[in-house]
Amino acid sequence: MKKSGSRIPAPQVEAVEHAGVRYEQIKNGLVAGLDQMGGYLAAHDAATGARLWVLKVYDNTRVPGKEGDVQDVFFKSMVLQPDGKLRIENERGLRFIVDPAARTSTLQP
Image (cartoon, rainbow, N blue to C red; front, top):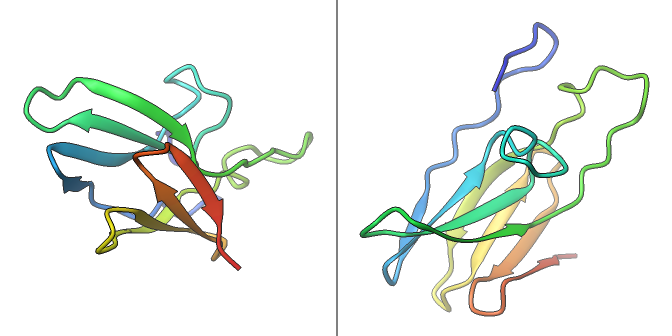
């Protein structure tokens, strides 16, 4: 990801491994062919590194005319819960529960 003089670097969020799967944030979704920079979670086979699936955790629509990189929103934290779901908080303080089995993301109140 290219750094801007007007945006602080994205938080470093470590990958989480559970039951043979490694979960990690995609930091440059546009380069990966996705529709936004942040907000995507990728699941990889922990043994082979093969990508299993990708999930959009949240939408991040850019406002035309504003510098793009200052509008990008990345994960701030990602924690594996005892039930095997992931709790993800983004830089705006929104929290989401990702159910890897269902491949769903739910905004938490």
